[in-house]
Image (cartoon, rainbow, N blue to C red; front, top):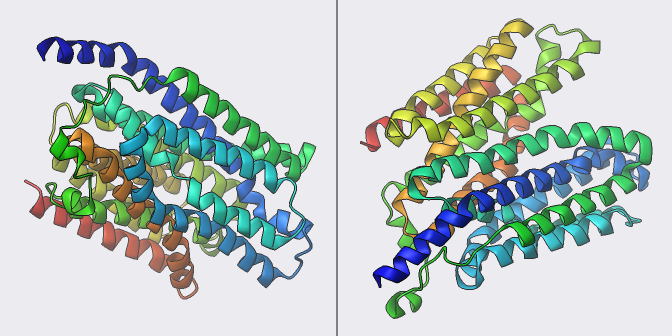
Length: 403
């Protein structure tokens, strides 16, 4: 028994850095590929014959929202399948689906075909949470926060770079060919995972009684503070994703020159994403010295302060600094919550726990733009002030509930 455990530990020590690199790079490549063409979906619908502005908004909104909505519902189920058949196989399955769907999107001839393919993609997507689990499972316990942080950093930086590259590609080769480039990127991510990730030795064989009782919601719900973690992830993403629908319009409202709005809003989004990526990375270092609640509370409080400053409509220079504060707080808190959940869950429960956390994340991703748009129709400042109130409430709740 001791010899077997020692051999398993040696295998983990041998593979974990290579696994970490493979998962992180593949995640970055995949998330970059996803955002090459999707931000330009309204333009693609125009090419497919939709000209009415209202119809464009409906087709684009539903097509963009249906994938994360279905993925949110499927995440726990796919996590359970991964427990039985291996996470690497599930990620490969998901990446193959992306290769096929992205290639088919380059060949569509009607708007309903785009919607159908996006819905189909929702059923097979979801390699993001499994990639986080793979990174956490490969790393030694003392490096778990760093492993999670690197993958989440890749998930942040990919969508930051993707639209820029996609805009260049769309201008030079066209939107249809951009989907083909995205398919090639996903193929590259698939090869990285297939060649670079080694799953053997990472999970100990389950005991017979454990094998008869696979991880369930009842089991992960009993983990310390897990329901609170779900609420925190949902609240963080609800605030984080609320900026998208209103920020460009809000900049015009507070006096940004019209010819500068696109540049300023794009810069603020990029700065926020970069700061969040830094927060994901720093979480591992901070958790070596402080408990999760000691990181989450000040991080969320800082993000709340950033939202308040946004609501007052300060000059652009102040908004740049505020974007750093807001993004850094969101990034720190998100990785810390995932790490705390990973540490409290057993190896057999970790994948399902991350699946439910990702369901909360994706649910916020799907609903936040809609809620922000409805609130922004009455007052765009109210979006930021309500974000601040919600984040402050999260900080208070975590401070009182988590020792």
